[in-house]
Length: 185
Image (tube, rainbow, N blue to C red; front, side):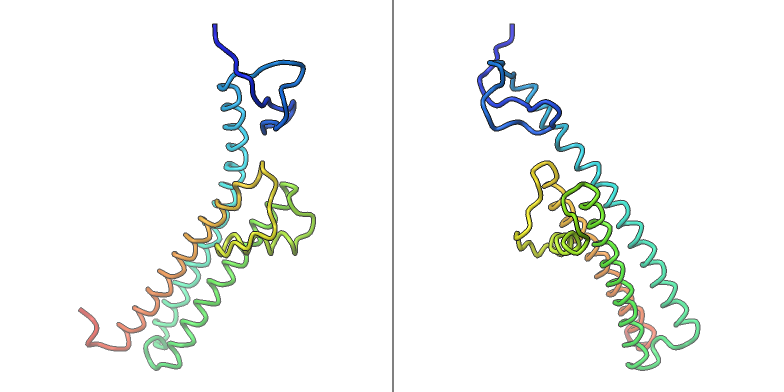
C-alpha cells in the first residue's frame, strides 16, 4: 500500500501543479506530481526544439551562401587584392549573418505568438531578441508553462552567434592567406 502525502494537486486539464490545497479532500502521490511536471516540461521543450531546428537550417543556408560568395570573389580574383575589397567582402558576410540572426529571432517571435504568450509581433520580437542575444532585461516574463523557452532560445542564440564568429574568422583568415603569401604554411 502506497502512502499519499498531503500537498498540492494538479488542476484538471492542466499540466501545471496547482498552488492551492487538494480538491475534494483528495491527496496526490509524489509520483503523479513528478509525472505531470515532466509532461509540462516536455511540451515546451519539444515545441522549442522545432524552433531550434528552423534556426539551424536558416543559419546553414546563410553560411552556405556566404561561403559561395567568398569562393566567387576568389574566383574573380577580387579577394585578397586590397584592403578595400577585403573590407567589402567581410562586411557583406557580416550583413548576411546579421540578416540570418534577425530572421531567427523572428522565428522565435512567431513561436511565442503561436503559443499565446504575446498578441502582437512587435512585443514578441522584442522579447525574442532579448532572449536570443542573452541580454535578459526581464521586463517581459512568459507564463510558467512556456517559461523554459526563454533559456532554450538563449542557448540557441549563443550557439548561432558562435557559428557566425567562426564564419567571419574563417573568411578573414582566408582573405589574409590569399593576400599575404608569407602567412601560408
